[in-house]
Length: 358
Image (cartoon, rainbow, N blue to C red; front, top):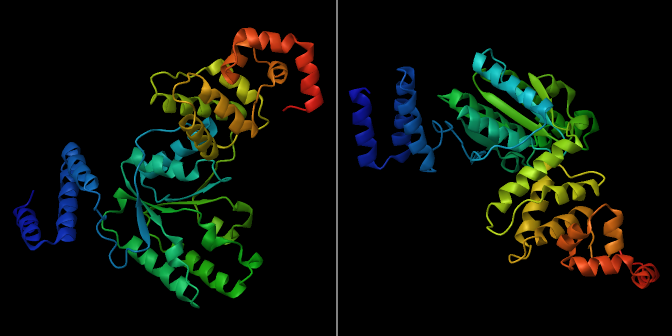
């Protein structure tokens, strides 16, 4: 570390200049890394990151258009086909060949944004999302001006190799100019976006996401180096993800364990499992709202939320779906002996048909 850096740190601290203090500390971390002391560099970066007030080299100019996204602590499962594409991105970035702009396409809930977070975590980079609600302005021409400012701030980053910029749901700016209701303004904005993409520093890693790929401006599509399609989940992929999510949630409870046999029968009762985003919400809420004293009530809640109707006490229907007497007991809370009697009781079946239960 240079004497000048030490003096600057003391000066900034005494003067209460927090931003310059952090910028200097960041430069010191970079010097440590250049000298081969990666461990110390990561330690300094961790201190800055944990303080939760670190702004990377300050977006020189107006930083109101960016929000820092915290990196997740856990990994997440994706289909092997998508995983291969993500590994390709790692290889391209590590080779530093200027391949730096990536577009993630797919339906809502397929994991596009989560994948960007995971990439930032694995590459040990800060992830900053562009806030489109602050960019889009009703004043004529102001949106384009804001967009230019955004890219000026991005290109001014002193250490771009430490940053990933996320344009989440970029379709807010990049829908097809031909099909837009406001052709002139949308044309101006998209044209500005095209020009700014062309001027983007090759060292900047940019990820954009969209679930409106078919309406996306074709000229902008050509600006991306690589497109990853997230609409490639098979049912078995979603079942594996559901298993992992349930197992993780149940770790919070000492009296609940995953019953994979029942769970997979539940999955088979659903024509199409939701994508990971919705699946995660269903599982978390089902387990959270289940009876804390019951070992199996979470199974009932997951089943009901996936099929979007109440199980009730329709024992015959559950049997027809392939559940055993013991499994029906778990799902309904009715004892095995009562389940057996109910299934075999003609009166019960007749009442069931007459009143249209289920």
